[in-house]
Image (cartoon, rainbow, N blue to C red; front, side, top):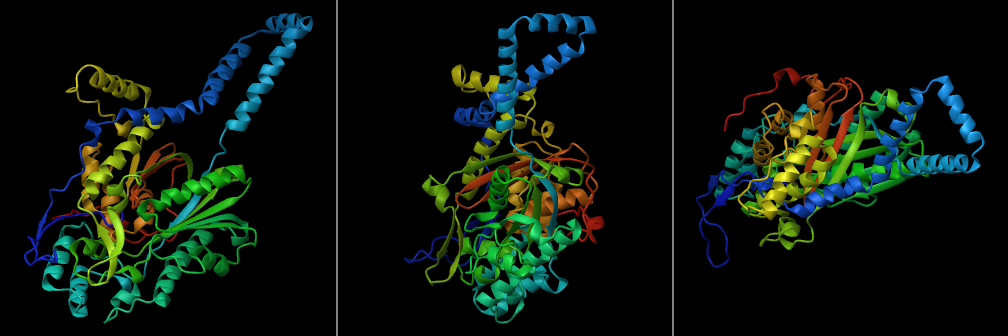
Amino acid sequence: MDGTVEARVNAGRGGADGGPIAGVQIQQNRRLPDFLQTVNLKYVKLGYHYLISHLITLCLIPIMAVLFVEVSQMNPDDIRQLWLQLKYNLVSVIVCSAIMVFGSTVYIMTRPRPVYLVDYSCYRAPDNLRAPFHRFMDHSKQTGDFDESSLEFQRKILERSGLGDDTYVPEAMHQLPPAPSMAAAREEAEQVMFGALDNLFGNTSIKPKDIGILVVNCSLFNPTPSLSSMIVNKYKFRGNIRSFNLGGMGCSAGVIAVDLAKDLLQVHRNTHAVVVSTENITQNWYFGNKKSMLIPNCLFRVGGSAVLLSNKSTEKRRAKYKLVHIVRTHKGADDKAFRCVYQEQDDAGKTGVSLSKDLMAIAGGALKTNITTLGPLVLPVSEQLLFFSTLVLKKLFNKNVKPYIPDFKLAFDHFCIHAGGRAVIDELEKNLQLTEVHVEASRMTLHRFGNTSSSSIWYELAYTEAKGRMRKGNRVWQIAFGSGFKCNSAVWQALRNVKPSGNGPWEDCIEKYPVKLVF
């Protein structure tokens, strides 16, 4: 999420200008709503709409299977008798042939082309960009931009954030005074994007000329020429590449970018697509004293990822995963949801990202919609029947009946929850009844790399691989939140026992994790 709220600010009432006074108290009582107890029936219907839209394909598969079984059980005499009957019945032959041709055509035309995740890479910044807590606070104090109340607020946020001492901030923020500039922001973008892409191309041996689709997402930094053009220029991609640059879409933009690439791969045959997800901190550090705009400073850190997708059947042999589902939820029509993560200027004219006090409730509503839509696509039939029957009983007979909470652990083997902040990870663990192992990748990614925005779900997947937990057939649920307000899910299935690729972000530190977090 764009700076998940980790704390509640009780600073008393200010003067006529509404400004806060000293004495900041941080409370950890902001929680997601118990969304699984208040399911809206229309979202269940939306989930089943996805299934109905593919009804023809679903019906054809069992019909063809039954026909195959029947034919396989026929002996030579049965086949001879069938041939003799059809030989003298031209109408039957024409009708059967027409049905078979029509059914095969419909199946081929409506069947989506498989999208394979060949490999991916996560950027890891050099050690000189590390920002341990003491250095972060000392540097913030020396800038002279923050008053004592703001410094105390940042200190308490850091202590309870779930971040460790090994996260990274850009070079411009290490200088005194800080030197954010367009040139420095470009340098940060180049280091992250090119670092991830160099590693991806090295691990896959794919040449830049083989890439037909490029999608780049970065929410807060959108220069001219675009970030996608910077990549095209650096790697000399071919002139007819289909490139896209997504801006202002928040921390869930990585899933949106994958969805866009997937749709393009349904149209363009035999090609590769690269999705680059990042965020830029250099020009988006807040140097004011408004509490709701200081939280992103404490959570966001340098990071980025590059993902190689393909629709080539030959890539299946070496691909790590196959894309199964993407479900997107957008709550932007609601004014509160639209403004809950909002880039603006404070009263002193300093720009930052403001986080609404309603952020957690809005995130819970978006999540409720998303997982209720996703449920019919991924849950076993037994779980769907229990869930749907109790929901109907609640709606028709007794409002006090609690809906059955589906066990998503039966649908997924691994969970990659966007590492936007500790509060959301904790609440998802509680509401979805997950274990500590299920949320371990998210917590450790937040601890080691901080909130890297849209790329955090890839650091989490890399953690699972580095731990040797990804087995053939395992299903992975990536779920991310973003401004707007959006909640998006991607479901992947492992095509083999997946091992981490070279130069992974956890390569030299995975043995240290998991670490015990104390707050």
